[in-house]
Length: 112
Image 1 (tube, helix red, strand yellow):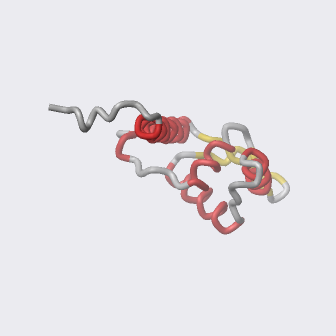
Image 2 (cartoon, rainbow, N blue to C red):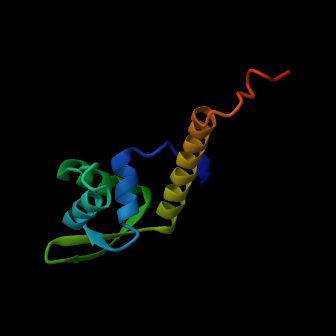
Image 3 (cartoon, rainbow, N blue to C red):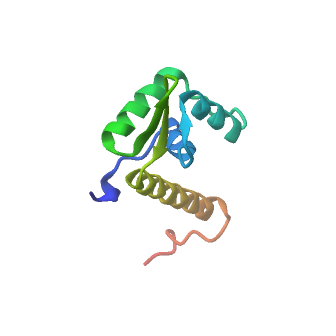
């Protein structure tokens, strides 16, 4: 699978995958995202469980246990590749913004 053809992740998708770098169940994922983002990002149960199901189907995560009716998940190697690709894409966006906002000479205007 060519990782470059994967669509950009939404903010909830990004944070769910990021939170699953360690084993977590649904409620823990929501709490972790809230803690990590200092409340900036909220992922509700409907979005969370829909994405967990999708990610499991796509092979981005795997269920590692199902005890006491709590499913615990962990990111897979494919999920890590997807997350890394998204992080690189975001770095490129920030780099482009820095070029424009950084006040440096506009090379586009000076091209030949």
